[in-house]
Image 1 (cartoon, rainbow, N blue to C red):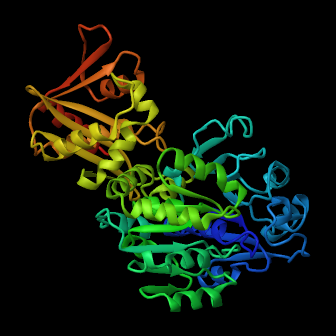
Image 2 (image 1 turned 180 degrees about the vertical axis):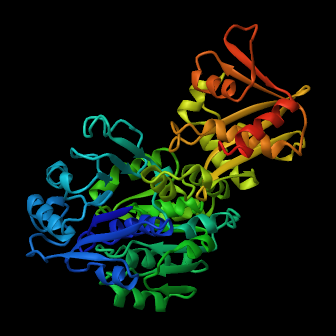
Image 3 (image 1 turned 90 degrees about the vertical axis):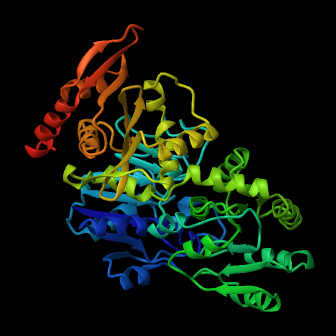
Length: 524
């Protein structure tokens, strides 16, 4: 498989678009997929970074200067017309047809995509704006929005949409540090980061506020990005403030976020990194396109939104700092709510959607305490709720009590199915009188692949030496897919007296037969 990325970095665009594409590229490379980047030679580009990583990069000609540094006219960010850029990109590919062309650029839309469509087998667009029409096979928007219908009129009917922070493109270090983070609800250290460029010098503004006497006891970590032109001023303020450590560009911030108690930063992609680690944050938006997302997150009490960079944010920042520093309960709630929304496996889900894993990669393991968020996400999936006997969303408090109880219950067995290291489903067996009731679900990213049967067989096989009880499944009449799965595995079907469901049974002898048939004979 061959993947090409069309993405730019520059003083004007920033570094975030390219860095999130690089996160995807790393996962593809780990699967043995060949990747290459197509980048224009803008001032502040990251071509050297790609070359240092030994990633092939096709460099498009440098354009004439056409826009001021802070312009949000995205068409101007491209530096040339869309038709001209498409032509340059086609020439750079030199006749090679990538299996996937992944496009991450606010200056490109359906005009460019239609021009280049014959030169790629499939196209995926990464967008944040929902403000223009696209011609693509997959659309990824990792941002949080109260309106999940925002792309309905902008995409082909056949396009698959990957929407929301569960697809956030985070480096693996965030997922790794997530499991070891333990936050106490107090603020002893604050992390400051406003991206690779920080055009409005908000780092200096925040440092100035934190230099006030009432905040002098707090430790501060400051990251200055690669394209930040205000480093000299930031260094001067940092040197004058005790308990302050200044860092240069880093490949990731996971370790610094894990050790911090509060973060102050922009409303861009770093938002999802902070949330993955349950790091409460004070957010200042630095672009117009960040406003809707920041306001939505604030409305759902997921961040503390200070305001837009052009507002008088210094006074609002002081007020919000005092509020969070003195409210342990709010800090703890922010941590839990953030970790419910972002689990750090979004990039793996996107790669799995574009390049499905073979069933030989299946691995079933016992669920652990940290899987509480995975089970919560799967339990509240709209399709799962519609097939359940109660369609109402499950509250976190109810789920937390249930999950912890089941993990500690010797009569319950909870498993997680992984493929290529990505959790993609769960199967559980819970004691009900003399039977073990089965429940299962698959992640939406792998649904429709016919993996339900394999999931249940692996669960039965894993259960073989743990419990010899009869298995029972209860399925709603209209859930034809699950009914077919259980019948296909040889379960005995019996109509339930309620008239709204079927009961399915499998005794121990039949369990042995099922596992022999589907495992030993190599059907799975």
